[in-house]
Length: 106
Image (cartoon, rainbow, N blue to C red; front, top):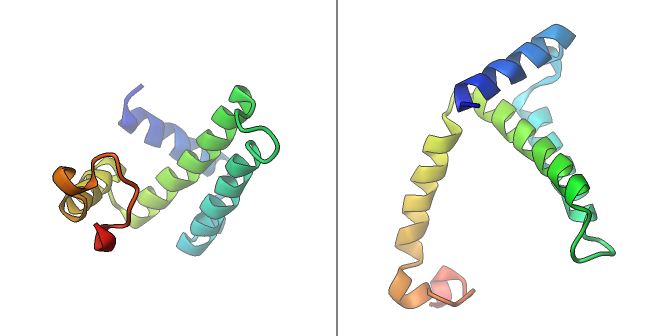
């Protein structure tokens, strides 16, 4: 399924339920954090987690991220690639490879 089709499905789902009224940028950002916590909860007592639960919670996080991107009128793939380019500058391979050190301490 293409990214366009995913956005169309999300928009239809929200429209059918008249939920757009609740999808402020603030509420969507809060929902991302809440769902991310639920994803983390999958690993709370089991480092491996249940794969089905992990997929479901990851889907929830991604859904709210896509809804927020749509609300802001930004292409999620474009902003990820833009941020990746910035991060490449902060973490050059020759200094960062195999290290988890923060960029300002490399």
